[in-house]
Length: 256
Length: 65
Image (cartoon, rainbow over all chains, first blue to last red; front, side, top):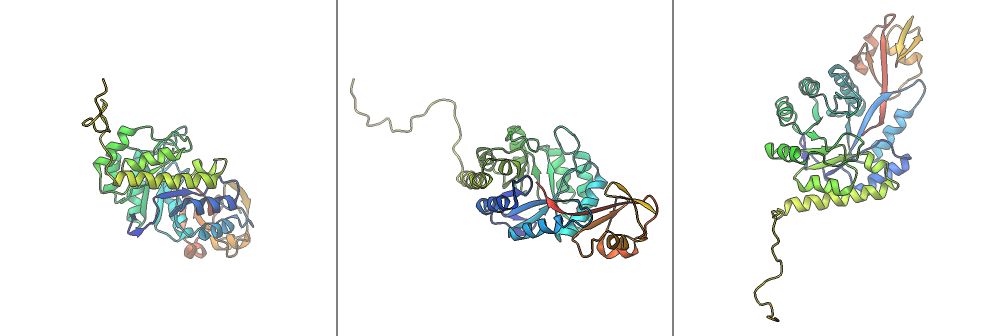
């Protein structure tokens, strides 16, 4: 899979938040085989070296780093955060979040498109956290985004793909654009479903970090993502309403 | 003078962003800065003057999803 010209070996992307300990985080990444880790920037208080310690841990994962603008509610805030992240993590990549609604953490489509335009002009390679809205997707692509990250369900809910029709439409409208289903996945079967639908990758965090055994869940997701991708590439059969015998009818012994 | 650092009113002596980081003991710490909601690159901190009431944000790498 290629994202902004960078070859990424795995179609699973993993967040770094909410793990019970740094060692569990590291073990979860090892078993997930994830190719990209998401990170954030947060206030540092005087004398603390929490940032440096986490940075060492993140670099030690040996994967590409994708900083986010999580929690930003305005264009200005997201743009400034993106600049701070670019300096800290030394990457033009930014997972752009401009949140528009407190309860659903739904992206603000207007702010997202505007922030994406500004950041692309500033030389960023933007990974917009978006909805399944095809009009918004078109605006983001016009702004210069080369990857889209539609939500499966609201962040942290674990509900899976709540709008199959919308996601299928989005996938079909822009078949050449790399798309990562980001947020809302709770189980490996949901990740497999996204991959079977032709999405290029999935990004999750809570489903792994908050599992009783995060490392085992990480491996479960890794296998599901691989299985789903294989299925997509294998060109699945068409569903039908009526039964069709799989065992040949001809040649059956006549026993009445 | 009084400025706001990461949301807290603080009395400081420094008159530039670079001097402020020194005063707060950041030294060579891996942090990024914003002054009054605008990003200030590390290379521009020495030239970023502080005035009373300014709002400074100092951030560092953290876990994220």
